[in-house]
Length: 88
Figure 1 (cartoon, rainbow, N blue to C red):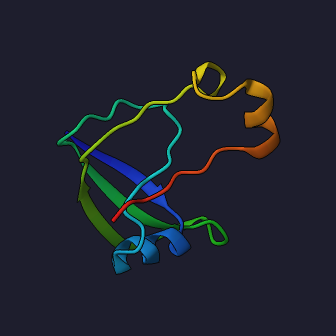
Figure 2: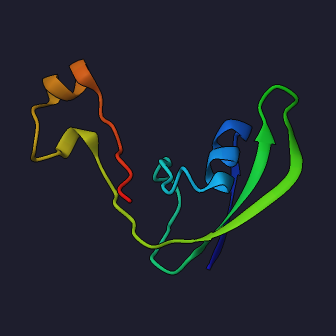
Figure 3: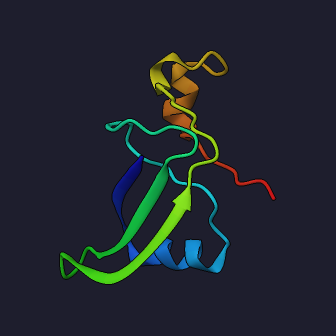
């Protein structure tokens, strides 16, 4: 399945350069391994698409409910937040 999503210029450039190989998204749509993310660069200042587009194949999907993580207490998550680490 092809899924279209907006992406801000700073993140678009990092994906294009190959430095950012992950996406953090609200889990408000269905996404599976093998789907294609069509990332359309969106300028939040002008509220318009720039016309630049990237297509990326989904290799892995991890769905997280921060209130139900078995690893850390909710208080620690609220205190420190979470980070996603890209591995190369």
